[in-house]
Image (cartoon, rainbow, N blue to C red):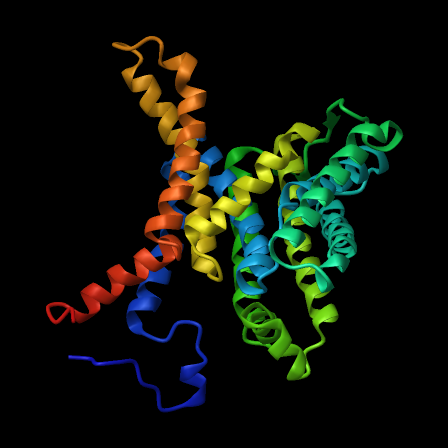
Length: 347
């Protein structure tokens, strides 16, 4: 029986997948993603695309909050910057959708870095309030700068087309967005194998000790905000091109709380947890809606109370995870793997 995982070379020790079981699970997951769109209907493809966009945003927030320890309640606002930038560049300047998406990412990264400046002086609750202010400031600008954003009116974005193929139908967009998710995942995982990623983790563990060791707190905190906002802008831009309509109502404070819930439930400081949390919080409303439809036949009043049930369930799930499993779904998954790896000698 194996009593641990041992490696005889540095290359094997630094591999992203160190054991055969990890490699098999990765292959199975990739095969599932490749096969899924050929058997799923439009409803499930839409859910899969929503999960993919949520994964990108959750990974970005996890880099900032989970790995670097900088609490943010401004994810919705940063996504709005990406969505409106991509929408304006495409709708009013004729830029191709992929070009506007790239520009939107860098614009959002710059905006996030600006709002990250207070992070040098603020921590914890105070930093959360500062990022909440960023959320409100961005939405105020969006709704009041009518000449640029159209104010409270919806911004209509042309259909994204590449080589004559419309990208934003559910099947085609699935391949685009999950391909991007794969690239984002590889980049994020490898980020924490670099000095930059290790500096982020050192700041999260103890920023004073990190500073004593020579980590430039201001530089790396701003960089963490910029990277996180870059991915938030990417998620926002993809949302704009997928939905064809950009409106401020899609990026309220509720969205920021939702993304924070994703990484809490999935697991802070975990890329896998970002996947789990994004899928869980995206699919939960759909599951509740389907259950409501199933019981509607013998309880017609369910339609009127379903929104309240969804809100109550949302809050209850967060509370239960914080109390019972603060490390989230990723820790539960790790416990399951450890149990079967050591069974029957579970001790």
